[in-house]
Figure (cartoon, rainbow, N blue to C red):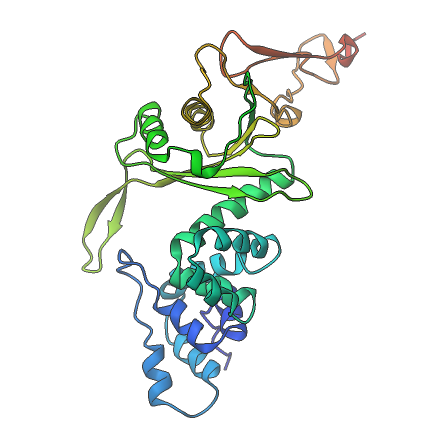
Length: 338
């Protein structure tokens, strides 16, 4: 008889194999208040009542009695923890922990056995710091590869010192709420980033806000149908480097990137965006290599081998500003039959 496949995912399995038992139990108990469909796995009771065999084996045996759907939420939690326990995630978590944890919390953080234990401990005991480290980690990925979603240059008359403590976060949150026309509260977290070999000292802002009201149809446990209304959590991560007078920002929407950058420049840097708009510093034109490929047309009396775009005009956020790209006419190959 074929052996039943384990429903435990690779992230949860890796955590069970590598982490101390008390932290494993903590992750499996860390159900959010809105997670109604995640079962109580009862791992603590299993370990207390069954003292035979290795604890990790008993945990896996217990989890094997559940369906994969039941384990999906905890698998995602384990994946988040693993992201900040490997590669650049470790440095990202260390950087944020030094900024966001209290002295007592940071001592306990450093006393953890390894990066995985520190990541789990932070998730369980300092969720705000963990979430900020996640934002920093994803922002660094774009920054280190030179592909931040957008980068702007601020044309200031005088260079002034700027750090996280000098930012009026309440005023900035109010301004962002206004320009994005938000229906719910917007929060702003700011912290200083130390200089590295690749980047000067910077200030990072994490802007969190609710998106447009959305809904999804829900199949209830009693077989009935219902509708769940919610606002998806949106986020913009902004990094300002005073030495470069440069704003880098990650966000899903181009409009949000531009408006949040403008609000930051106005509130934090006293920059009059209406009189002197922010200057885009980078343009990602890579999409034109594939999105403007033309199909070869069929025209009676002609044999066409290639069809190419010879000129592209890109509007840079405002109709009065444009960027034109041109190639030579030799890009066309047109042959007349017979």
